[in-house]
Length: 277
Image 1 (cartoon, helix red, strand yellow):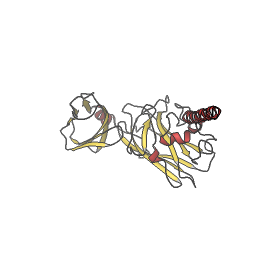
Image 2 (cartoon, helix red, strand yellow):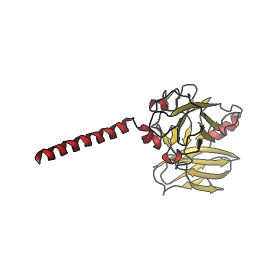
Image 3 (cartoon, one colour):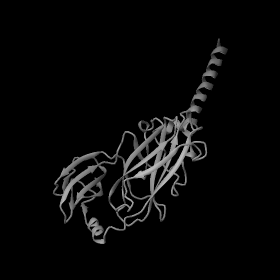
Image 4 (cartoon, one colour):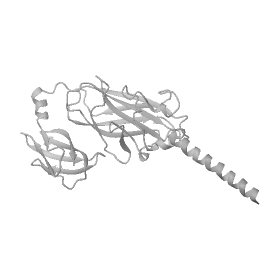
């Protein structure tokens, strides 16, 4: 009887070790396709700054499949205007696939530093990673029939940055783990709009938000009429909108954190980052 009990305990212990080992293996990457349905860990766009893509976790040769990846934007051919907000769309297509993932970031061509501000516009399917310098999918944003697209906003850097490149890595997953997935990379290069007059650019820079950080309220300083002010959180959710504003906005009841203030003046949208204490 004692021998049988001992054998049972040994088998139970061995079974427990196998289960624990499998769990550890999963968390360390062997089954990371399942763990990463919640998004890329960050730093996997294949950009010069990241120097890594999804093949770091998923086996296979990049761009070796029959899929097509693309990055599009609402930035005109003339280029982005510093401080303006644009919509960026990442798309992946491959027949007979219904599970997808991605990560996109933007870098300054001059030194490969991250630039611009990425704003989540759909918090159900996307989220920020890599120190808020990149965007990736959530579990709810991985399904599609042969194709999947993700949208987000990008606030162009206010300073004279020069050319910027968006880098994206996309995964067409087979749902069986990390092996057999098809990884694709692509990029989109945009220029800075140098046709914006010096006076116009200086006018944009003269629009001030103060105090910042904010405790109770902030004020927009401009010599032009403010048509409207919209306030967004880091998830891209609009939490307030004021038309015909006098430039003073009460934020006393807002939780502490980082917000984006979009100011409409003379048909232009200027975005300012606001920190709530």
